[in-house]
Image 1 (cartoon, one colour):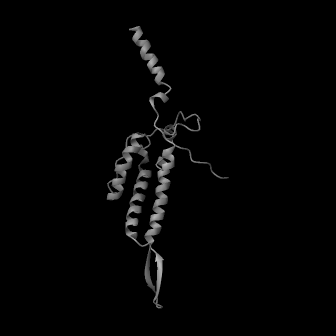
Image 2 (tube, rainbow, N blue to C red):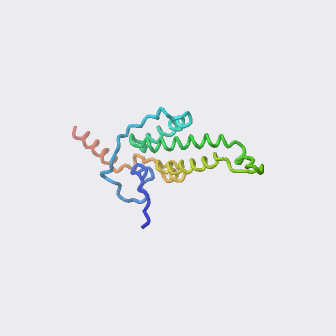
Image 3 (cartoon, rainbow, N blue to C red):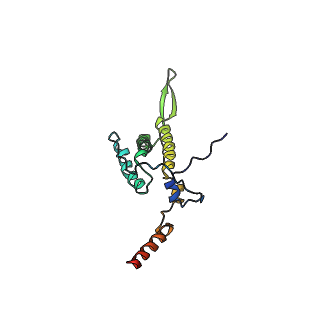
Length: 164
């Protein structure tokens, strides 16, 4: 039996405007909304990526205190990608002399596989936070007009002013 699609976080559904128009979970677990701190052990590249992405994810309500491991994985993968891509340089292959035959062989640099694997990991982890271009295209920030309780609040405010 093939597993179905992973459920999206409610905050992402809200940002997308709940395209399926299915009822949103009422009793969903809500982790502490505190933004996790950037790990001290990060290298310079991973730290810069954390500082670039984490505040925006937190502002959107997507990043909470329990999401640090996934974001750490993303930042480390990004750092690996950048460092390996820099190591590749202009050539994707290198030449070496093989064994006793002294034949010149050409092979792919190991950094090419590291870049490919890191980019795949980045793509997977970006999907967890809605950071891919396709997922951003489906999102929109909810406006005050979309809030079903906004009209009720205005009505309550008007009626209490009349009573005073």
